[in-house]
Image (cartoon, rainbow, N blue to C red):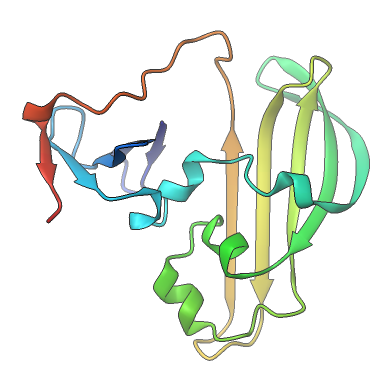
Amino acid sequence: AITWTVDDGTVVREISNGKGLFVQSAGPDSKWTHLPDASATPTGRLADPLRGLGGLTDVTADGTEVIGDEEAGRYRGSMAADPTALTFLGLPDATVAALGDAWRDTRVDVVVWVTDTGRVVRIDRSWSVPATAVGPVSARTSTRLSDYVSLINIDPPPAESVASSG
């Protein structure tokens, strides 16, 4: 489950579970839209922020920083850019396809903050390429993870508040 805010202040909620992706994008009292899976929106994939971290290379410790109210070690690394890694930056499938093979031989830079108790509390990913078929492209995500002691409901919203996408 993720909640994010658009530049205009609109709050968007998404729930991704085995039953699909549920998106509420017109405020807290609006209907949810049921989509087939997490890849149905560019942001749906962001509900899995730890994905791909096991494949980081050249990881180095880079000091500590206070994230929220906890001190966390900062670690820098990178992963090979490929179409999957780029979609986890929030780039839509159509944009990734339009890039052609401009991603080849490039890297996604990743910074991860980890507390002394082993909790990942922040993940930043960034990628840019100056020349593609559609011009220069860059993408960046920053994910904060918190409320580890809270239960989260990933059940679908009540059926009466869901509209089908198709």
